[in-house]
Length: 98
Image (cartoon, rainbow, N blue to C red; front, top):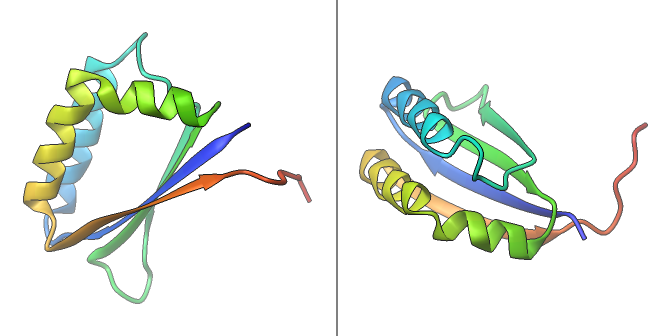
């Protein structure tokens, strides 16, 4: 079953966050289990971000979370947040293209 993690946070350092995401993507090439990721910014609050990360399964997400590179980047991201991050862990029950 597809699994989606929603990560919501606020930061006044978005350029640093983007650099961290790029660093993580390079460091985890060939071993991360992320299937798809969307990085979004709130139009009404430019310091508010929501990342939508898709995995093939909950188990794949947990393997990804255990990567040393993921643990490292998570602590770096948390240090740059002014609020959050807050995680929502969701099993996909329906997935339809409309």
